[in-house]
Image (cartoon, rainbow, N blue to C red; front, side, top):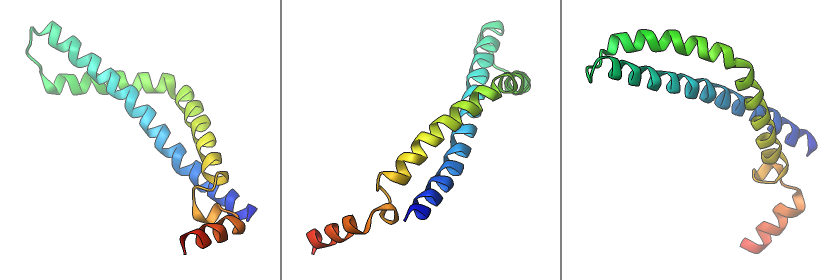
Length: 110
């Protein structure tokens, strides 16, 4: 039973880390893109040139994400580890429950 729970924690951690890591990088990139669009709009008096915004945003976002990549990784790993431990040991998944809990649940449903 312990091996099943540990395997669940491991798989959950990997999947959640990928999700949080990519989400964090996208969030930083979105913020930079939004700021770049606002700067372009103010400078161009309401006229937005999408090609210039994309080029500027890509350069700024790459630099911004690169400078914050360590923070993004640490936050993603902390969140992933906490959530993976909760998922693995709380009994949310049926295969992580003890046999007594499963038998009790089946008896109460039947």
